[in-house]
Length: 209
Image 1 (cartoon, rainbow, N blue to C red):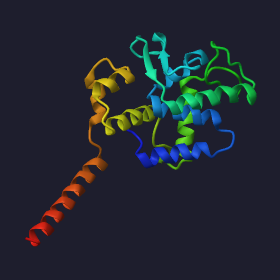
Image 2 (cartoon, one colour; image 1 turned 90 degrees about the vertical axis):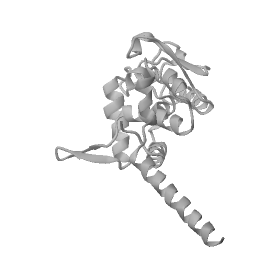
Image 3 (tube, helix red, strand yellow; image 1 turned 45 degrees about the vertical axis):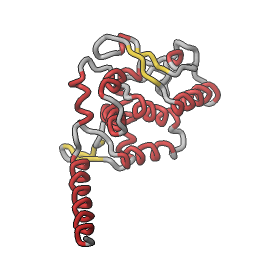
Image 4 (cartoon, one colour; image 1 turned 135 degrees about the vertical axis):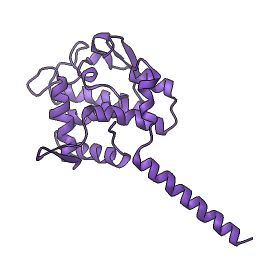
């Protein structure tokens, strides 16, 4: 399971946010990182699903398991979405009626999963310098699904319970959600480092006796 470290997450957001003309892509990446939506779910969202709402309802037909669910929108996202709708109307001159797509291509059609994954998320991950080599070609180290994993990994790190993450993620079982509690190599290294610090402190206390 791939997810971004906190530094990588910050770098990605910064790269998009400071780029002129990337307002849509910035809102998309923030939405993925702060809600854990699947790419296909976010593409299916209409303006009326978010307008003046604290919870986003994902329609059953957009869900992997065919069951709708509510996803909370934090205060930061609610403010960002209000600004996005104002920008769509005043700067992009796009339709902001309730039934219109929340995110569209420059040609005026609803974003597809492929649009969002390849043309937006992976493009910005490469621009942020997070790349790997595949068959001699430089490609994005992470995918749009990595941002979903990142969202739930951050929640787990901050002590959010597994049943709560399961509800937000839309998983059928806790076993599917449990992967977000698996220790990363970085966390394992840090755990050993903590032990070394503790041992050093114990030795110093013993010397002072």
